[in-house]
Every structure is written in structure tokens, then in C-alpha cells.
Image 1: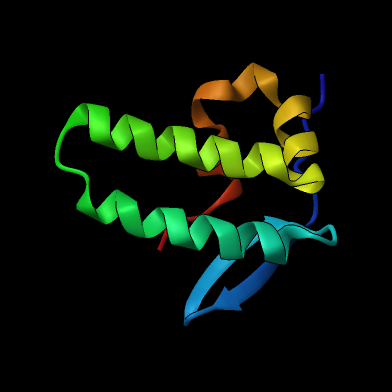
Image 2: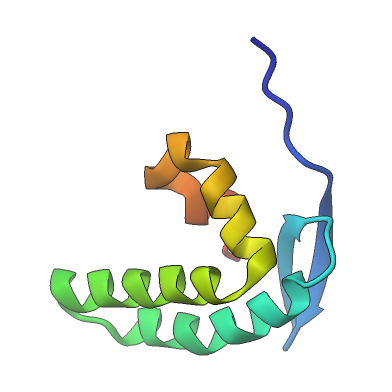
Length: 88
């Protein structure tokens, strides 16, 4: 079995470099994710942080390009957000 990683692109928004699959549409996903990501810095309990993760998944579900990525990588569900976004 050969696993291949999709070609990646780097997008810079607000001086933050995001590494995502090289497909059109990811810039809008990132803009929406950035809003949610700010909440991640402020969560203080496990349940608050879990809610932020659920919000990130909701963003992915709203956009066709990221929804396709999630659906095609269900085997790696636990690490999927970490594999898409290289948090800096």
C-alpha cells in the first residue's frame, strides 16, 4: 500500500502561514477557520476546547473543498485537522 500526500500550498493570511492541499477554495476555508482559531487561545476547560474543535469541523463541513478532504480521510479522523493545518 502506498500513501501519498496531496501537493500542498502555502497561504499567508494576517502574517500566518497556512499549509493546505493545493486546490482552489482553501483561502476561504482559512479565513473562516482563523476566526474560530482565535477562540482556541481563550478556551480554559476541556469542554470549551472541544467546542472550538466542533466549530472547526463545522467550518470544514460548510466548504466543499474541505468537506471533500475530510470525507476522503476518515481513516485518520483523530489527526485530520492537524494534518491539514500546520499551526504555527
